[in-house]
Length: 111
Length: 113
Image (cartoon, rainbow over all chains, first blue to last red; front, side, top):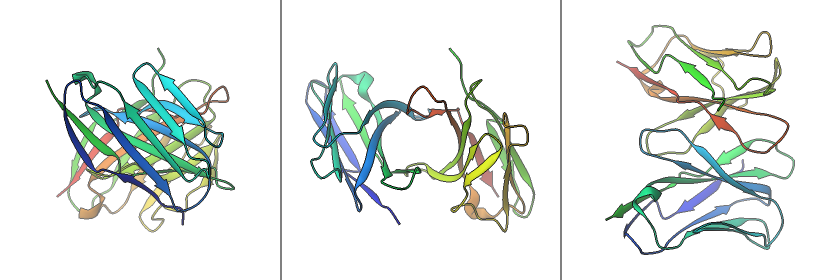
């Protein structure tokens, strides 16, 4: 079945440093979503990418979808303590409407 | 702002007992999902409903788990009998026709002793 892998598993940064998490799928995706889960909270939708090579920005967050639609990344510029949490990518296969979540990247930020 | 409601928030049970979780999706959302999230992992889809019909339950352990959404609104997930390995967060989510995002509820944390 479809597998979605995320790296790194953990990332600790100093406030103000940049952060990137990477997501790779074993199969070509029709789209990919990103979610953030704060400690003790539930996943909250951030964005969906659909087109090959797509890049979307939300303030300090930049999301990319690879040309082959098998990988994606989330980059945070100048991290803040409010960015703390686990970031999940979730891919949807071409003929499968089901979202498959990666294991997530836990980001901690030292003030 | 509309939210997905779940109850109970916490459940402690002994193995071999039966447990049930309830979810009320955002009003008007036709699609409802039950996920299981083990600590340190991403959510894993157990069952997906479109209105009252099951669309995907391929990862639902059907020998012990059951889910229903009788009137296409709220939903119940049941485990009988519970096993130690069922300890996890059970998340309910819903989505509507206006956007791709899934809206998650606060979850039910199950501990099986």
